[in-house]
Image 1 (cartoon, rainbow, N blue to C red):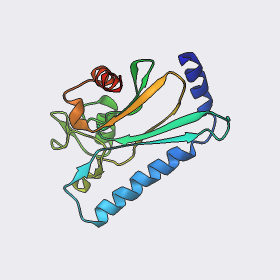
Image 2: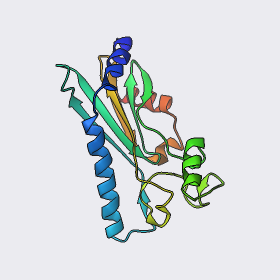
Image 3: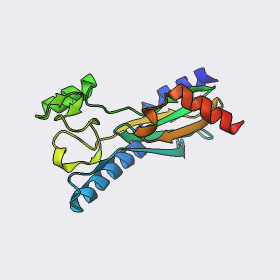
Image 4: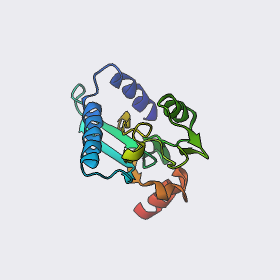
Length: 173
């Protein structure tokens, strides 16, 4: 049941999240590689999921999600979207505060008036304020989970989570 999923997820917070550390390290390593390739004006959003067995509870599966920028991941749980990522946009209050604390500014909902996303891989010309630190989340999977959608930012300019679930559900039927 969905209630069982929420109860199981509460137990995840009491353990060290090893896959989360690995994904964060992978994002940082890729960002270093992009800098070494001298790609200063180029960047990318990213979303990554890792589905794995819970080492502490036999038979339980966990979905670990990481993302930067506005690439998005969500589960269809019991016919409804359950977002597993965070859109990192310069206009969001927490991101704006982080940018300003780092010495940058937000103009017209863009970092330093240039970039709409506030976290990205690459974009090294803005790296003092556009970080590659991903948002991380763990989710216990349950019987109510039907499918997972991962998509880049361009899709979300045209379709919301609910419409994407409806479209994908129709394709599976």
